[in-house]
Length: 73
Image 1: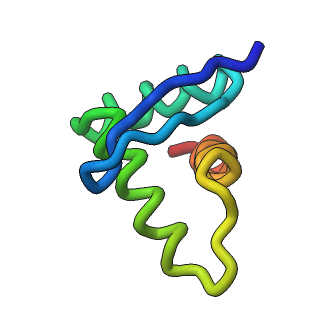
Image 2: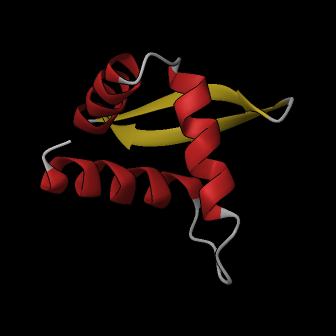
């Protein structure tokens, strides 16, 4: 099921839609890195924006989670 949440990035509110499993995994990663979910998303967003053709943020979050899971964290 898709879950929509709002986060503040660089002082601006934005809404993100992700499946619950992705939200849960992002929360787990943030916890293991001792940071907030918003801080983790902010870091992912900053890296995404460095790309020549940045993907949308929801896609970037899914790819980040996939890479983390595949790497075994």
